[in-house]
Length: 78
Image 1 (cartoon, rainbow, N blue to C red):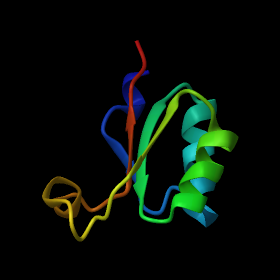
Image 2 (image 1 turned 45 degrees about the vertical axis):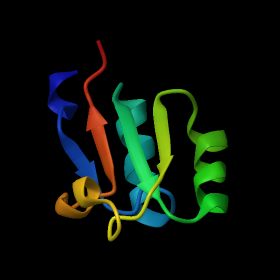
Image 3 (image 1 turned 30 degrees about the vertical axis):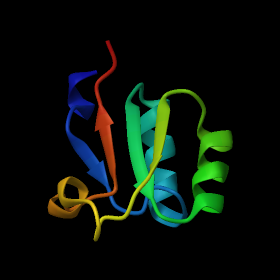
């Protein structure tokens, strides 16, 4: 699914961001999302399944995440 490679979603654990992540997953993407709130992250893990990779980190504290304008990255599945 090359059309999903490198796509990013801001705020992937709730609201519009979560809905976008769900749509990407339904389209065949594998998604990496990050956040700070452990409860939101756990809920996302349970709801989204194994193609959603959820990592606790802060965009402000993590230099790699902080440079990216996003909190979730969709990667094409193989």
